[in-house]
Image (cartoon, rainbow, N blue to C red; front, side, top):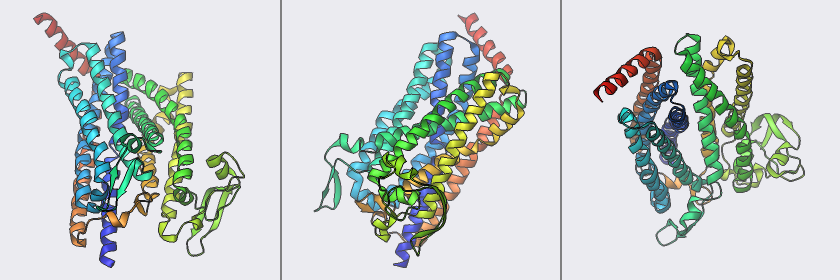
Length: 457
């Protein structure tokens, strides 16, 4: 029993580590693809060479992120068969379908047009360049949809039956399984998180150039669009997050109770700002909250009761402290994103943003925060589902492979090593590319190429 607990813990730890590192790359890939497509569109419609240079520069950073993210994603999926054999046997008929669709309909689409945009950029028209960038953006978005659909099925399973004889879940309705109750809410929530991260990434790099008086036209124009982009989606993310919380209250009430360290079922339930959970006595030693706000936010009525943790058996309760903290990290950073993008937009409207050292330095320092917010979001989503790997259907302990503790320790060490190297590689290449980029030299080089092509023609 002790060894089995170790195997379960190590399997979960390994998957958590690989997913968190992999998700460092995914949101930036999604958001930058949209930003690049917009730059290509502007270049196509205006012919302004600045948009061309912007598209080329951000595409370089996109490719670094995409390449390393691809490596972490492929490696991560090996764990389904290696560490989670029980899970793979039980849900393979369902979980495999969206993963296959992601490869066929999304990955090949984005990969094909990445090749066209990168290697054929100077051989195709401006309109075709925009089309290629648009297809890359569509591909990355479709990829995220299929992954979210598969993951959402684990939270709100639908469109399946249990084959008792073979002890596995079998799909009976593809549409119901893919568009399960939480798919679209979670999909839009993830997309908006990706757009916010990408906006803060572009803002930070632009701020870096403005502080060093380098690549100023590119930095100003990039920051302008990124501030607008970030403001819009920081605000809409608040509404998306609220919709997600309402859904969680309906479909996974134990998860919501863990988010709020909410022990007793009661109406006029408090929304806690701070608490110290007391697990032994099933209460909070100290708490600060807003009366009635939890009931109102989840049910639209202060008098509507919210289920407490005591309604659920102890072995079916998610971790309380970890979810409570991570949930507040996510919400708190979301509020910071709204206020900061409003501040930047106000400074931009006044015409003082690009010379405001406080705004520029702070924007650079804030670069890690959307990564932290996205990570906190995934922690509460996945940790909040425990102890179920498929909510209400299959426990996490029943999905783990029958491996030895030593095998998992060795594989965990290997994954930590390789993923740490890949994360370092991405940061190193990004920093190197940003530091060496000189727009004036790049422009003169491109003009020389264009002149040579014209003379040849």
